[in-house]
Length: 507
Image 1 (tube, rainbow, N blue to C red):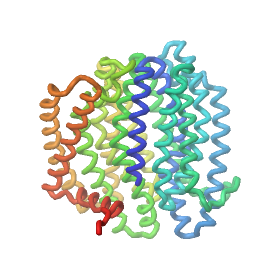
Image 2 (spheres, helix red, strand yellow):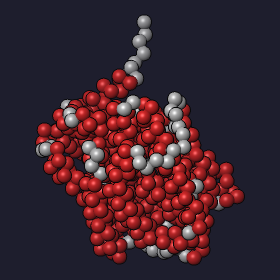
Image 3 (cartoon, helix red, strand yellow):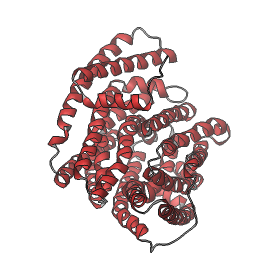
Image 4 (tube, rainbow, N blue to C red):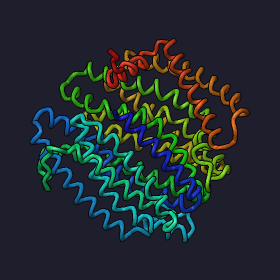
């Protein structure tokens, strides 16, 4: 269900990026919007995102299991009230300091673009409060194993920009995108409200509650890691703004395509197993914990490896199909496709990293992932400073991939030390089979791309046939090769789908 929600979200995300590319291209104002929209994201990641997976879901799950629903409702009320008060005060402060924030994040822009950035930040900031409340609701629903409503929250957010940009672009230009963020944040919260039926919500501020203190204690190391991570994002945007007016826009467009497989695979599987891992850890079931984590990691590997190689083959054709129209030019496609290829170097490691982090969160250890995050940001800074002058924007992309590689490898080592050897989890076997099957798939896709390219027309339909045809050949090839290699996880996914959506019987 989470994967379906993520697929809908990523699909609408592609529509969103297509709309942005068509209406505004990849010019300076689009880069300004990318930086402005990062402000609520950074605040959310700092105050809610890290707390959601590291503290809210584990503690909410434990309270629901041990103390019952009425105690859970009271805890939810206290946390929601605290988040609302903190975020409201922060929004008011940043509204006043918007020009200073614009200088910090976009100091490489021209003075005119910096003024536009300050205006966009002021428009977008109220979304911070909406994102925060939405995140707390998501944590509650996940702890109750209600995945449907939060699964489609991100899709509702993307829909806000898809609606607002075409309607308001003629009057507000790229500022219509900032209005779309506000609309999307409202929709993301509203779509989850039906899941709160029966929840008794009251305004309560009580920092003495033991469960509230436990959540804050677990959150503090995550806050440290997120602060360092946000510093890296801010430095990344600042450095990118100095490599060209369109660099941030090219990087953001490439990141959109990276997020599609990452969200469908790593995020969906990690969020799905987190409540179970939390319950198994609380019950002291080490064997069940290891089995669940191993299954999650194997599923991530057998899905993310073919997705990475397939996207590598289709990098330029996919960007041409989705974005190269309106004000988005072939020059933009060239640089975006190279950014995408360099981002793909870190995708497999970033995907494996998610369930490893969540395994530590489930054991209510938030300090270890936070410290590893600080280390990986150090790797980013080192690589970025070494490569930005010879490679420009692409040096920053390589630095980002290096960060994911270092983080994943370190977490693998620490996971092995914490829960015992990983050899019996079947990760090496699953990775090997996935690489063999995905390698054969990529070879067939390259042949299909070479054979079909001269046969299709240059119009939109021709591009769609080319990308869709090659992707379809790749999917069928991987499924056939994985079946021949007896990849158990592919069979598991097939069985799960059949259980969820059984074929109708015809009598």
